[in-house]
Image 1: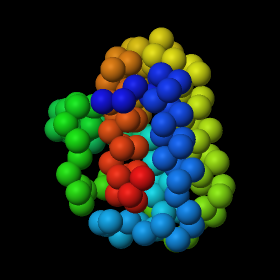
Image 2 (image 1 turned 120 degrees about the horizontal axis):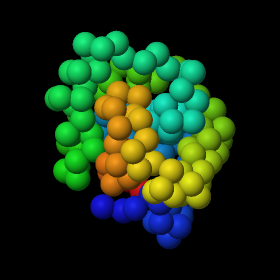
Image 3 (image 1 turned 180 degrees about the horizontal axis):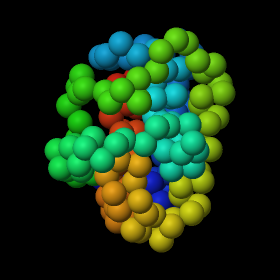
Length: 151
């Protein structure tokens, strides 16, 4: 698993994103490349712009922590066509260049803050996570979708 907190690994993600073009097509799934970039930013929005998203209620959070968290923060890769949580669904087209710039900015900010800033940090849906769990969540999601678009 790559380490989003490592400058070299973070730059690798940025290089992969920079290899995308507006008409890059996915190898599977229904998202367009601009939607995928916006979709990948949602994980970071929940950290840096939490006011954009509704927090799950106590019953939903229990279900998420119990059943979804191990799949999201573990090291096993997502399978193709994995279900998408409702708050991650992106409808309509987005501005490719803006979404690319936003996602790269989130990756850079996360890398610069480092693992110390995330160790024990409260997740929107899963409670407190350690820095390894945060890394796995970010890295696995990026890898899944960048691979989906062939980069």
